[in-house]
Length: 156
Image (cartoon, rainbow, N blue to C red):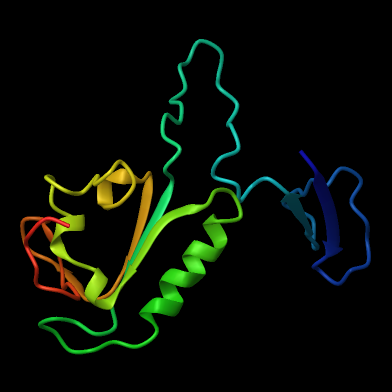
């Protein structure tokens, strides 16, 4: 793990602190920034506390995205493709994405249980993390609804 530490005098008093500790009487504080080059990597193994089991990644299918600007039955949106693309650009630093469906390619089959892991590669359950950028709402029972780009209910 690479780390980098910087400190700055944030109180303006010009005094350096010996151990970076402050008491109630100190008039200045010290700002320390720790940079961990692996902090943003979701695939970096975490240290496991002694005696504790750790979940393991069992799939090679990691990421997928859905973005809708032109809906089958809702008003249009702007910048959802850029939103999903930004997320994919970030996560693809670590592992390639499985899919990115846009507009009419965003259909109910990818979300329903019968086809949501189509060919073990496509759909909501085929990946470990999926990003949906578009209209959506949650009802009073905690059920989330998302508008689709296509109305098809059939198999892919």
